[in-house]
Image 1 (cartoon, each protein chain N blue to C red):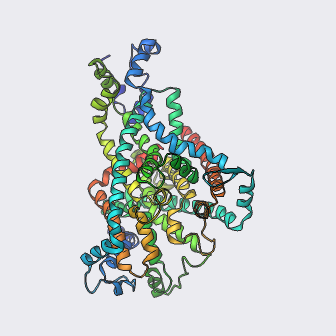
Image 2: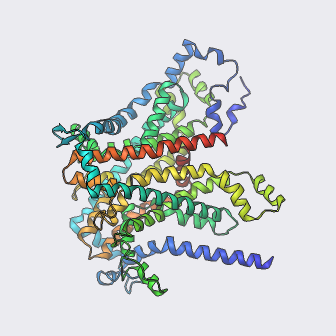
Image 3: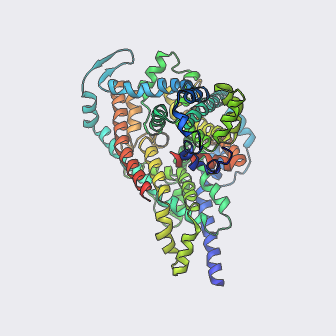
Length: 277
Length: 321
């Protein structure tokens, strides 16, 4: 019996050690390289810096290229906040009706939701449409794209949650004279709060981290999002590894903060959305 | 009207019961009056705002891509040229290898995510004290920007002085030039993709395994079966829905994968790690908009041919079990 517990304990130690090496060392490497000075960082070794240059490098990366990173963070925050707000309102409305009113319309809507999950977006035709709307290479255009491409996932989350709200609530509210918009926003929407938080968290991470859509629909360097400036930074300044990795660290911090505070919510959102799909 | 057992059903059941749960009212529900009430309470125009955005930015481009793929196109004018784009797509070596690489990448990543996700999930649902921490550690890369992961790993995987090469040569293994060798570039990127994405697969499996009733495992205990029997005869078959989900999700993601490949190799060396999504971007950058759209159509058809029958098959299997 004792050898078994011993074996189990040592197995656990090995598992933890392997997981730490494989999954944590890359993040430590990011942080260490981001804390070194320019010459030391060029070695690309996994070692503590002789002098910690964290603040200098933060200042350096924001100063680089005329403070482009400020613009990029501003754009990314606007993009994320506006897209997610629109997504929450539109998808909650769809998820509610799709679940409550089965019929031909709901069947079609459900099929469209699934198509949105599966079909890869057609890139150049999307550019063509955005051009017709005069929003190509603009932030509003990119917001439209993010809303459209993330819609299916959010509708699925809302639909699943609405199913758990008893219809009797709708009926009670109806008897009190609430219909349509006021019923939805006064009675139902507040009840959706748990799933709304989940949707906000997961889609914020998706939109903030998105690289492909900004690359196509808001290209350039001057007025881009953080993922795009990080990508351009890599190709332009491949000698200043300390600043490149400080940029990486800065881009990784927002999801890390969300993950530390809302671990369970994010996990629930990603797995339930996946399983229902 | 007062006692509703149906309303207390779990979320998944509530949907099925929704229509039948209310005794007494059912006959009248098809009547005009009730339909009017439904229209007031659950108005169809709630679909409209979302539908407009989705239609304009997703549906219209998808539909018109099937026309523009057959044209020479400058975004302002287009000339119908029949199948020429597709002929070019399947005759240029670079584009053909892109098609093959896409399949290899999707199969390798989703295969590894299934195997490793299952393995991690079994370990992390076992009696391990640090499992909460380990779950978080494995999952966190899912939330990190792909560009950040791509840059970090292209530095870690550099030959000679990269961290991976340094460690491996200390143990006496001569590592390949991961990203610089045409033979290993695509697989190296695929491994990084697995590193980043296996956390989601693991969590889906954990949810699936935790949903298996304990009785099944107890039955194996009674029969005197060991851990392997439990895995082989209980966990593996009963976690099948999770397996289906992981396979479908990672195939859908793997077939359209672009950002990691683009940040790590840009499709190189040569065309050895080009996939359809990266050739779509390259042809777009070169101004061949019709050809690029043809690439999109090829990708659409490939995804449809693989994912649609697979999900039909998985659904039928789930209904049976």
